Length: 135
Image (cartoon, rainbow, N blue to C red):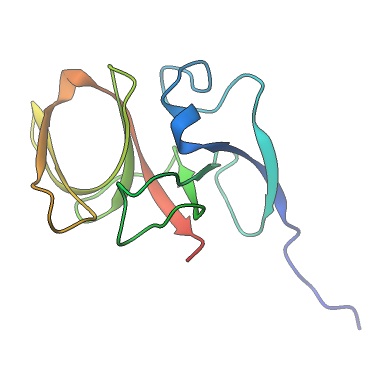
């Protein structure tokens, strides 16, 4: 018989640097607009999922330049999750969610040499869970 498999869904892809430029996300952190490439990716249940290509070394040692991370804006975010955060200043960060209070979010760095970052909630445009990475 035929092999059964989940077809790979195309999901949008942009570079990490572009993600901070504006125009690629709506207020909720969902991908919008043109300029996205498409990659095929199996088993993503979130129809709004998208992929980011890592650039630079800010995410070492976890993610290296050229790695692809898949982000699910519809997934709930819990402590210990790897997340992508976009600040109101347009900065896009990949971090680990350490703690969330009524007014702040504490983010751990993927690089142990960096201190945790505490951001006021009102400085965060959106935060979404990283569900997969090409390592």
